[in-house]
Amino acid sequence: EDQVTQSPEALRLQEGESSSLNCSYTVSGLRGLFWYRQDPGKGPEFLFTLYSAGEEKEKERLKATLTKKESFLHITAPKPEDSATYLCAVREIQGGSEKLVFGKGMKLTVNP
Amino acid sequence: DVKVTQSSRYLVKRTGEKVFLECVQDMDHENMFWYRQDPGLGLRLIYFSYDVKMKEKGDIPEGYSVSREKKERFSLILESASTNQTSMYLCASSFAGAIYNEQFFGPGTRLTVL
Image (tube, rainbow over all chains, first blue to last red; front, side):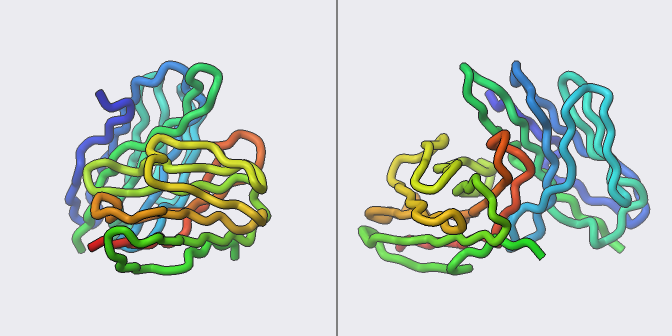
């Protein structure tokens, strides 16, 4: 069973059509949740870190929120340049050691 | 502009060859990582290093080794390449403190093993 699940796997939006990406997790000792953006042929680029339920972070058209079981990446009035794969990762403490678990990613396409 | 660079963007090797992937960061980061990324599997950690000459196994270390002789450089070695090691390899670095702080990734090396 996956510890970090991203949904949907792919999403196609029209420019200006707001939506949300979901990242749900089942880890027990959460020590941070990260969002990354990855463009084709490139490495992931850091977007946000969230540490506690209720926390929110914003950057341009993106807003990340965190609850005890999931995180949402809200995209407001997206533009074609927001097209990318968005990765969620969870940092947990397991047996005294730290671990980072990535989701499989969510491919967003924004059509003009 | 901070950077993580990887020695090759594309690499084609034959089964059984020894393969070296090099990664260099210019941010004076203590922590460095090697991941592989495969469709449907996401990013998986191969090895990481929290200091010069120090290394720790990640989730999938089998068939790989690493070397960190200088702070800025972290090498991934495939001792005898196999076709199931065809993948995108990503190097990353982060500041000291918690190992998994915000990570800075390189552009990746797409390795094909024939």
